[in-house]
Length: 330
Image (cartoon, rainbow, N blue to C red; front, top):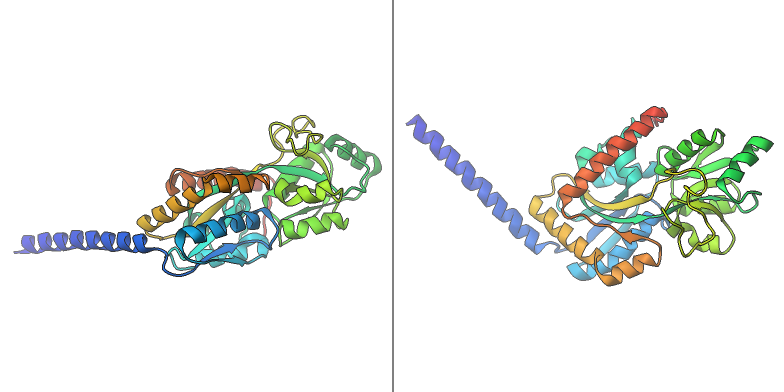
């Protein structure tokens, strides 16, 4: 009798699991039936915000529902990160993160109340973008080598800006300064490129590592002076700007990525549906052409699992840099 009871229980559990799977699949097929919120961890104007706003109208068209942009700057992206991680895992809250928020902050911030690798799940990478080492145009240097020589010769007390302590522009600058054997004062800006660019144009800071998409218009206008670019070859838009390798600093500087994330626990059928639709939108010729205008390259993943593995690898590699340089934020 007991054996029959266990068999019945196992049969019931299997039936329940299949039923739940069927319900989840049906819910995924109907998604979305109301507006979807897209959380951005910085103020408008930076590369992450640009990526989200390029995706917004095309995804809204594909889904037949509004995509509401929600900029939540502050704490190096952690305010938005925590908001997204605590949202219901129903697909109606998505997060456009990047190498800083989703790969670096987990190691850097001891006070972080969520754990990105545990509390968020990757949907797909979206873009990669080249970066530049730039200075305020009043600084009498035209290359990274000249910058190093100028600081060593004059003892100039320069400031460098970043999107926050532990953000990749900060870590890349730390790496550069260490290799160059010079010192500067770090000035973090919670609003990312949207605040960093006015700061360098206003000479609050004299040096920074910034993405090309956010800075190109001001470079062309002469308000920011580029010294080197992180790409393997020179960009046709800035043919006179040498690569970091040409400048004597190979491998110094990140070609950063932006990716789409959802709260952990989103049912796999729904996660797969979101992934498929987002990838389809990102790979359209129109989207690629539009992003190319702001110097971004579309890079998507075959599956959410592939992207999640990439992010976990990034967390490990950046974690080593954070630990080696003893960078912590309480």
